Image (cartoon, rainbow, N blue to C red; front, top):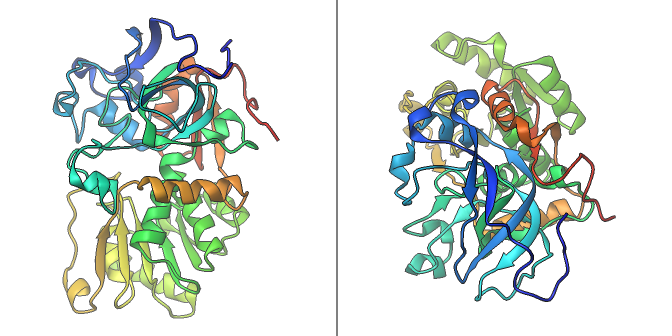
Length: 387
């Protein structure tokens, strides 16, 4: 039991903890790569915080961390020979550094995974994402959320929505904040636009649907199962494409997909294509995007070596826009939408702390709907709601 008495710089912090750890000599599938080990609780600097993790979200970057691909553990250059993954968390602040003034031990928070150096000119510029040392917490750093205690930078903290349980609050950060930056900041989403959403029933897609509807745009949801199609409809989407009907490795399949898309929209091509699948879908994205449209990409879960017919890009003057997580301002704006009840977490699986490898393997299979969470310090589901 954590004593949440306020007024000090620190609550009780143990010396050691059991954490789920990846080491380079066992890179591979999550079931093999992740092992529970006893690790010393890290010390913090002046602008850092120790967080008692109540629940953690599961993301595809944890699969990459387990595989050691595309970033091996030795490539992180952190000085540690182990990696605790997990890039989403909700919990209670245990300890704050000497330079932290905004937060107090006992505060309930969620975490955004953007890490910066606080020292380069870009960190004081228009976006910390331009930082020379920008990294993703829990993927490119060692101290992620699959442990009872996590070390985070103070600018990673946001208030936990009081109406959410620990597992709901811990599940959405990375995906919602990424989707927000992709659509709102980078994509310039406007009311009335058509937006093609790959993987619409997955972790990113369920938030992209809600953002499109909130901004008055029309989501066109690409899914791979009836269950995912039904989830998209429950979220308010009306236009659904079954990806499995089309062979997107062949030009004829890409053209058939384009015809089906235009049939749904009344002859309109998408103004924005929401890309994160990569190799398996990118040629189709470039082909179907509207003249002067925007293809916004934040990742490549099927492979990042992309090929496509560039004539469709330059002759129709389309744009390819890269996007990566979100800065603190964008994350805060998106989190306010959750606090106000305008965006809902879509949590379909909650597993126990001892099931972290199974949770990460479930993410790897891509058959799940919405988001997956793991209870870390919370003893059971449904705890943490204040209103």
